[in-house]
View 1 (cartoon, helix red, strand yellow):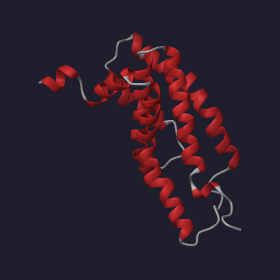
View 2 (tube, one colour):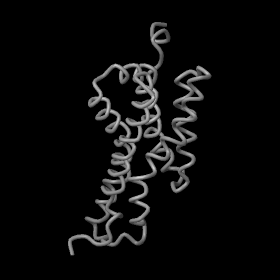
View 3 (tube, helix red, strand yellow):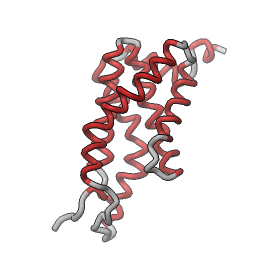
View 4 (tube, helix red, strand yellow):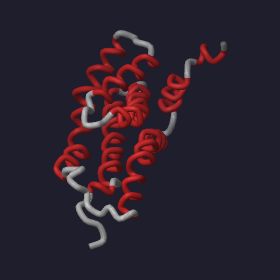
Length: 171
C-alpha cells in the first residue's frame, strides 16, 4: 500500500526529476529516451555497413534530417506538447494517464514508422512526456525549453548517428 501512496514509477520519476539539478535532468532524460532507439536502430545500421552495405538507398533524406533536428522539436513542443499537456494540467488529470495516453498519441502521429518502430519508440515518448511534466513543476518555460532541447538532441542522435543518413562511407 505504501507504493500507492507515493504514486507509481512514472509519478515518482516525475517528482524526482522536478527536484534534481537541471543538468542532471537533461542528461538522464536524454539517456532514457535515446537508449532503445540507439540499441534497436542506430547500432544495427552501422552493423549493416560493416557487413558490406555501403549505400543508404534513399532511406533518409538530408533535408528531412535537418527539419527533424532543427525545427520539428520546437514546433512539436509549442504546438502539440504545451497545449495538450497544459489542458491536462488544468483538468487535473492523473499524471500516469497523461503520460501513457499523450505518449501514445504523440507516437501515433509519427506515421513514418512501422508497428515495431512504434513499439520501440513508445518509451521515448513516455520519457519526453515525463520530462515536460517534471519541468512544468518549475515553470512553463522550463517545461518547453527542456522538452525541446532533449527532443532536438535526441533527433540529432538518431538522424546523424544512423549509418543510413550518409550516402557513402570511407570513399
